Image (cartoon, rainbow, N blue to C red; front, side):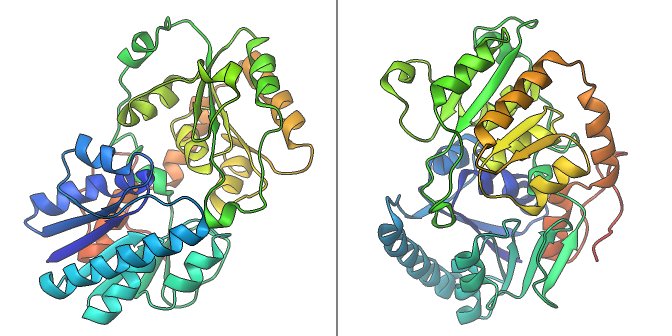
Length: 353
């Protein structure tokens, strides 16, 4: 098969990279097309994934519309020349549109209920839409639910083993308590009018009062007095950091979910919530949602509680891994129509519904 994979966010690289490797090992012709978005291109280079960059970055919604149109037009030209059998994507606006024009099958993955614009532009044209079984919307007959999360495509224990050398590389000792604080830019279309923390300095002060080291990773500029405290981590090593952290607290849902599936308690502070953040909270107790007007204060109270308690978070994670499957296997089934080889005892059989 000739397969197109479209990448428009760093998380998309992680989501597809294991599937890309297995598809190529099985002899499929895989073409990866990217847009410059944060560290997406750098990650593709780091993982030695051949790719072509079709469009650049965007600042603001009006520029984003132009960049997206450019990306889609260039993807269409490549598809008309190369004639793919399948085009796969997360979100899948360009993938679904281009596949419809060239007669390819479009396979879309999605887990974000409130991103209505993307859904309205992509889902009517997609051939199939794969969502986690905790996804709170019904899309209709083209929807296939699976027992997993996007993050388990690359952080399932059969796919990922954290590197302990990241601790010393950060200048920490193994016995140090440290927290990862994540601040986002609020630049996505679905972020308009939303919010997270109040004063960042207050977050840091209260966390440090517990004796924890705070590692700040931020998409946006920090106050001048805090900018020098920004932590620089190579993007491919961030999951090692999250795996060994004592706590994650932040405004980004993806990194909160990554921490949770790694067994690191996560506090998610954002007026938006999703099916997967709700489930990780209510079913597994690995993620704690704070969305209301008092979210800043409540989240910090919970953070202090987590750091002071002696909860066995690995037990929570073990239950999650019993219930969920390796999402890369879902990706391979979606693209090729067959299952990859089972990779470990924690993987469940095909349970798509």
